[in-house]
Length: 390
Ligand SMILES: Cc1cc2nc3c(=O)[nH]c(=O)nc-3n(C[C@H](O)[C@H](O)[C@H](O)COP(=O)(O)OP(=O)(O)OC[C@H]3O[C@@H](n4cnc5c(N)ncnc54)[C@H](O)[C@@H]3O)c2cc1C
Image (cartoon, helix red, strand yellow):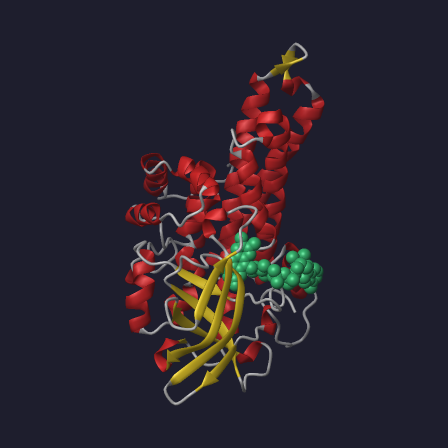
């Protein structure tokens, strides 16, 4: 990374290095790709090192760091051990709807244990007919005297079978207006009427994504998070921060592959001289280095703007898109210039490519990142819109 230092982070960066070494996180990430499972022990180890809940306020058990500082730590974690544990570190950020709008009981029973690495909470937004167009959420919520009843299917969800609870987004019968009709609930995943199933993935296999069906699932009134019909606004705010931080994760992984490949083509010879003497090899790597530098600077500025209250949805969305594309190009060249071994699981590049590839779809597809940015360039006076497109 060629970014200016963020003062005061040295000890925390050293903590990242220590936990990566002590808990063998790089090796564990490879194992979890081969034998997908939720890494509970490592989750607790990360939390113990103060690396879960980097952005979470200290009053809720987190580290209370600014976006920019959190971005640096995630970058380092991803550079040293891939996407797996950096994304685990971000789990409380993915549940900030709960941190910011949850009741004291919900926070005590679910959010704080999440930050301690003791409880896993999923996010159930996507449905078979509502993904990019998340405002089309149709999971039906019926209001009864005792509480609420959920009926519908959530798809593509990370931790489909591993999460102890999930933040579930649904629509009340009278919530017909797209954005304004969505309400969030904290739903324990062992309740009667819930059926969960894994659909195996290309990468990030440890997440064990899949489908969760809700058939007549009864919830008490206290399961609601925040106001009825307000959850879409909460989700939008969360997505902007998530995307900017995810950018640093993908760039950390891309930088790792680039650095290893620069060293490899300096040492490996073919046709009687080191590979880097071939311009066909050297030029793509020179370009990747510049692209990584540029994407890192861009993501860092987006994070600094969010810290300074100057942040916007568009730049955060573009940071994720740019980071994903840049990292994928660097990793693809790493596979190519390591030759046959690069394509094999003997080296980490092929897994890194599969894992980072999710960045083009998860938390909003790349095309939708463009939609979000374009909407800011050419605003449409006052019309409510979807966080991932509409
Ligand atoms: C690794 C991973 C983890 C995920 N985790 C979760 C999770 O925990 N919880 C959850 O709720 N969801 C999760 N998702 C789902 C993810 O948010 C959705 O897959 C994503 O929003 C796209 O929705 P979709 O799959 O329905 O695709 P669709 O909406 O059907 O879109 C398919 C493709 O069409 C194109 N497209 C769509 N709309 C437009 C447009 N307006 N302009 C141009 N092109 C367009 C894009 O290329 C898009 O990828 C995860 C996905 C992945 C890959």
